[in-house]
Image 1: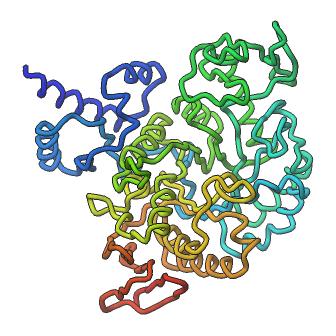
Image 2: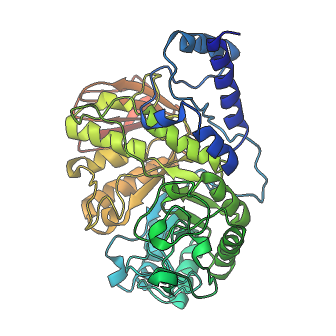
Image 3: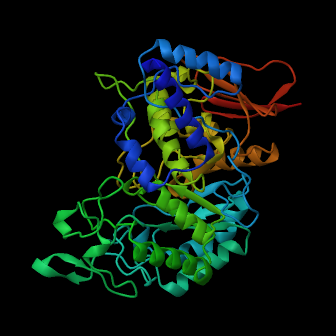
Length: 487
């Protein structure tokens, strides 16, 4: 059999395998040794598409045979790959969630749990259905992202009692509450052999066997890491049976004792997605979103590439490895929106297949869109969203599929923007837009983008001219954006 025929069959089998379910960690390591794997850092070619019929699949496979072999594609479903049990994890919640990130980088200074408790009714009245709270455990850092004693729930944000009262206050108003769970790393309580900080205290009194073996600076004696290394603290070896057992029990305890409805999972790039699958199956969240942070693709001169398929592919790979039991922040869409508004290049919002160019164009039910968070904005400002385009950005994510996220500072630090966001949230709810809504892109040119959502509304962003065909009337508008709804 010719080599290209073998390659074709291999690609087909790999795609089917990914479609059926998540790979195990052992399979992940096996796949990582194959020649195509290093190319995951490069953008996918334009021949990467979602195949919907056998005829199209055969046609595209023939096209692939004529071209140089690229990174293996993942066939991305628009619906869940399997029928989920009624009592199983619900990664996207009801599918109609609107998430508020309920803190910023400085919130630890302000008796935060009581602050959110006092704002609970206001948050509900605005229309939010879920709130993401900050890290909740004892931590070496004030912000909570360097956890130490996982069963100590007294933090800079408030006491354990204040946390539980805050969660209950939100839930009494019909709002789901997500805890910010830092699973990748943990800070030690004391020094071990050689004066290395690798002895953990509290209920989970681990030692260096809980640390990945390729992190020599912390004397790790576990297995090699299955992800990227976070150098500021010991990275936990999730392949150790006692670690997996302890963390599963901890998450279940948090669900029962604190009442968390779900999770925001920090730095999930640090450990393989199959571990997330185990944690989600154990804790049964009603919503879960992972932070899989990865760099976009850029041209030699620093210009963002139009084709960001490689970037969103890696996010899809992580979701698949997690068994589809968690959503992911759509960092691809954030990066594309930056390029759109910084360069006035609205054509970037449509990919080569005519779909939205971010993760929401491939797997909308697993896409959690956002403009800003505590890292990119707030007082850190690592990747601040273009200030002149915040209205347009929210007009985009609040009318499109996926689960939109609103940043706390944009609600409680900008009254004009808050008013716009509330109006857009109302339109989303009134028109029944949800995480699986369909998008028909009507225009994507240099200075204007327009799309029809679910045959219910039309949104336009950009300074260019656009008006929908008959049957629609203007519902709302603002700076360089407008929305029309059916008459």
